[in-house]
Length: 114
Length: 114
Image (cartoon, rainbow over all chains, first blue to last red):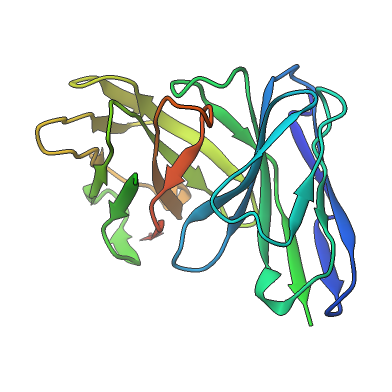
């Protein structure tokens, strides 16, 4: 199993550009989520999904959209990039949406917005 | 809301020293508690977890005990190695409508010198 994969690994955008961060998992996990990691702030939840066709907002959803058309994929879209979205983005998946479940993280995408 | 507080870093130790990283939490219910580790350039991976009070999680020589009376989940290792150099995150997950949403502490950078 490849686990959780993310592309690209690095990306530089100009303010106002749009892009999609890709996330895929091959573990047949129902639960998937996106976090951003900023220095001194740990990781903060952006959006999450408890199954195909179901998404919801996390702690910091503004400026981001998601969709979940398949169990495997959970892309994150930046509609109009801003410098405040410069961060490292992690996708995670878990077997089910239970609080006791382990979540598995991808290697991350480092995004810089100029 | 839920929150996690970790001891401030960075922490620098010599090989074979004893490690403690403090973690305390605030939660409204009965959370599950986790320690995740992030090695340089990689995503987060689960180190250990505990899902109810008085449980002890352990892995790779690391231990943490879920103390409900002190709302703590301190990470310990008796003898650290250079390969333990990484960022350590304490996190909690509480059952609710957002599934297995993780709330993270700020992270503690550990450097172990030979």
